[in-house]
Length: 325
Image (cartoon, rainbow, N blue to C red; front, side):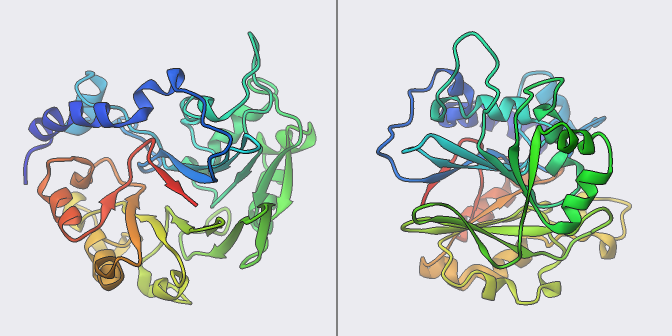
């Protein structure tokens, strides 16, 4: 395997050049006649890249400015006609991720935008997926009745534990029920449906999302246990889906020396490719890996692992990448 230091140095310029992320503050406004689309706002695991308190070679290179920072996994659903934006998960990187949506919003002049998004859909209560809600509170953005869709268990967690309960009590956020396997209609031809996902559920349950547009559909599963635990199966969930953004936390168990591989709850990338290879090869599914751990060599554009993924017709999601619906 190509070493982190040399590989990141080789791919850094390419990543920055091809991504709109580096220049999002100067981007031209998205035309209102464009159809709905999903934009990737982040691609790595809850600890970010550089990861917290990490001396891994890849983390050091980011801190030294020799590789691009990556943001924690999140998506935005954009409806250009109405300039509406919906977040999928509110991460600790929320400030930068809101900046990456400036071209799809009508921005206020010389003041804080008190309504930077039109709603948030939450997958679960692990730190990378909901801590960003705090920025919508009185101390920062100070939103008013921002819709936050969450399962009953997730809603109970937010409304009975500070500081999240303060967001509810002061009206910064308005919790909305998120029924499983039932569509939430956001606009004509655009809907979101949550479905149960097996995962570590210490504080809340976990869901994935199916986003339907007028022409295409997309599924988002940033965190899950192994696919064998799914009922219905992953393949059944992907029926009629055009694009899948799936948990790619680890390429292999070799990334975690000293850890019991039986305790790793995430599916390995190779296993996911094996399950979906037939559909990807047939061209009926575009499959992208997201939520990559800082140790995952597939983050690196010139790694053997990334080349294997791409040779098999899969890809690693990139910040700023868009999928029309």
